[in-house]
Length: 395
Image: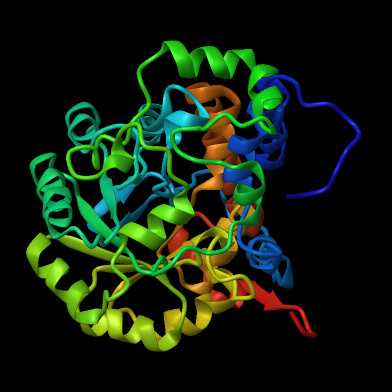
């Protein structure tokens, strides 16, 4: 998460990078909720590698390039984005801050960015579609309940979502040991071990108890997990998602949707080629933030091979581990169409709601612009592989 400095992060104005937002979120959240955001699978080696991988490649700047005017915009999945940055779909956001997905959607709209909501969102697809005009994707989980699958697709269609993104790396849940230790469920279940943590975070507790009731509205008409039934995310994946899902199911879903379609969770060259063969508009190179298979490769480590494999037949979005504008530049120079992340804004959401997310995106925007100027480039397409040098030695 970056270098550690001897100062205290106690308010939003103290936050100068994503690591600072993480610290402020840690201070403000009950520990089961914080560790749900922060944790990953098993020993969390892959989660740590997702960010560390960027350190193995160095940027090579050019000078005397006339960089007064910078264009940071891209086109991804048919929509223009003011920055090469997407806010990944993440679940349960109103548990982290009462504003939840509404705050993230508002910031995405303000900055002109793609924004995704999860099937496990705490705000409805219908509301997001009605209230926010920016480019939107539905992150889609493939359930055993075929009626629920069809309903999610129809909701996205009626709400005029721009894309559906099928998550393909949650065929079973990863072993999220932090959540097991804290007893985290949704909705939260207060246990003797966690009571003090909730009690000593009165601002969070008051918001949770007296503001809008927490639920998962996109599931509530089909499964108990959408309402008051406390369930861990691990149990949700293991009991409700269809472990028989295969390529034919993904192809049928793409055909049923009939619009822009993306697969999230592609990590192998072979799968990337097959996704391009089936006509996916984009793939997200992602390992679910290290929350599934610990010991797997990082997205950035796999990015170059996957970009070469698809050879422009579909867009490639790097998802995971991004904490700095320089990480964005390295991914783009490797060949990514865009870069996406969840924790990079979730810590900020938990720390300070919409104001936190806006500050986090503003800081990343400033890092991207400053980095481009220092690299001697004025457009994203000038970030090419020759601007990178990989360090020698093993990863």
